[in-house]
Amino acid sequence: MTRLRHILLVLAVCIAPAAAAEETATVLVGDSPVLVVRTMLAGRTAAERADLAQRVLAETLVDPQCDPAGFVVTEQEPGLLHIGLCGRTVIGVANADADAEGLEPVVLADRWTGQLREAWTTEKTELLSRKLIERAILGVLYPLLFLSLAVLLRLLIKRIQGWVEGLGRKRGLRIGPVLLTAGEGERGLFSRAVGVAGWACYLLLAYVFLIAFFDRFPRTTRWAGELLALLRNLGARVGSTLSELVPRLLAALFLLVVARVTLRSIGDMFRQVRTNKLRLEPLLTPETAGPAELTARILVIGIFVFLAGLLVPGEAGIALLTAFALAGLAMALGSRPLVEDFLSGLVVLYGRPFKTGQTLRIGETEGVVDHKGFLHLRLIQNDGQVVLVPNRRTALEDLRIVDAARALRAEVVLRPICEECVPDGVFRHAAAEAGLRRDDGRIELREVRAGALVYRIVWPLTAQAREAEVRDAFFRSLFERGHGLGVEILSARESTELS
Image 1 (cartoon, rainbow, N blue to C red):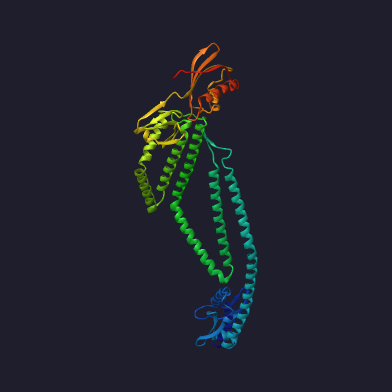
Image 2: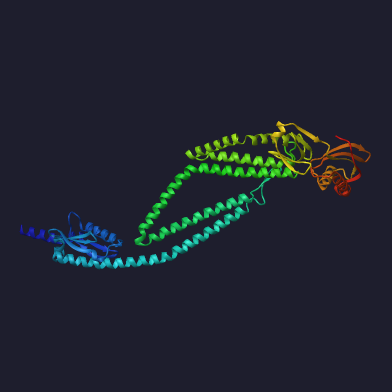
């Protein structure tokens, strides 16, 4: 029996060091071992106690408010001492720990506190040094990065603006006689839009740089968080708003582009009508092209403004449409005489009951027609005074053509030099040099003789024209310019025949 006890005692002595070794755990601060935990406490193994202590030490290392003075030893329970740091318990010291080290609990607690403070202070100093170096490097790199991004952004914006400035200068879309290109207005609009977008990118870049700069310093980290939260909230609001408005914005942009193209097409078409490059008679003549272009532009702008009003969301759109309706009603009620003048002007311009240069008597007013507009006629009386007569008077009052024979009438005999030569150009050129309107005359081929053509021409005189001077200038131009324009003038004389 005694021998059995000795054997068990020897086994216990041999096993005990192994069990103790299994329970040993080392507390590290950074990569440096500081103290060894050998016993269990409050149901935690030595490894769990060491792991908990390491986590507390690591968290307090990055706390800018925590310093080495925060290490304290307190007795919260009888026989149990606590080593705390900045209000948090690092590790407890029990009697079992003191027995394992062969020291008193208070002495062991003081020893562990000194070891922890020394290692923690060293690690804290190294960590602060690394952060200072990192901040110094980033303090130089952040401005350089910001400036580099700003320069790249500026180059990109310049490249886009250069592309926009060259848009459509050499290319275009031809529709019949009309060439559609991007004009100065469109290019300027797109260039300004690119510039505004560029400034928005600059502001966003500066804002992000400010957030990153504040985030590098402990005392301004809170400001960086507030700025970032503000940016996120603003981005969320802008995103939600754009998701609702993008279809409407795209539609508005489409309407704007279509309106610009339409207005440019209208301008090109009427410009070609005024220069006789495009003939749309009797619908449009050079005389009616100006007023008709103004009317077409007003109608196009009104239609596109109304369509744009339909795209305004919510109550604002309803209010805008109501304003359009009220404005239209007010204009319709308040401008009835203008509407009457306008409709009568359409009859005068396109019905052409009389021509410029003829003498009219409208009621008691008499004068030579100098200009036909959409709202009024301009008459020049015998004494030289200019009278504006509303067009509605042409429909409501008695209108008579007093002098229907005030015109240059001539008979011209000519011989074409080539088969392709057309005499019409000779007569119109002579009329223009005589001070008459190129397209007001009537040219008739009356007879074909052996090797010669006989033309009868009638050209209305303007209000200021003197018949003798106009006749002499017309005939002189015929004989001087005829050969250069492809015809040989054989004879030209004034005709008294009325037709």
